[in-house]
Image (cartoon, rainbow, N blue to C red; front, side, top):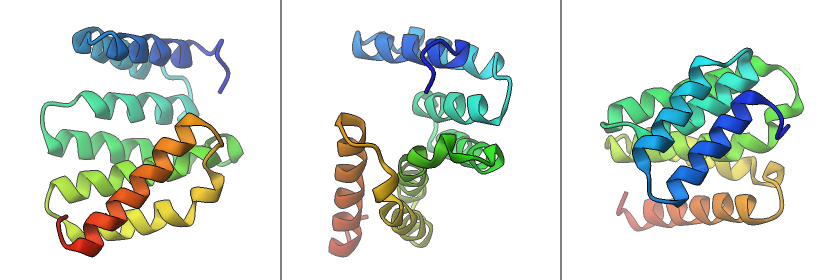
Length: 142
């Protein structure tokens, strides 16, 4: 991602606020990113982060679905490495809402795309998240 992109900058600002345990500031930065989106790529990135700061599981699910829909609309490889995380988040949303079938489907999609996840800490978090989700489903604790 281009660190000079205004939407990416706002999301980075929001992530910094998250790390400093300032959730209201993080949410505001992510919402500003959504409001300033210019194309499907920027909308995907912003919606992905907006989903993290919703008051209800239903709203988080809606924003995760929006992020995935925007990724599908991008039409090029800019979001390729993002899909495992997007599917993981959709799976988690379904799981929290009690939709085990939907969770299973999205976790399988995430697992199938893990090769696209980048190397390093971000990819490691996604790979760990998928493994834990699949473990929960196998154990019947989802």
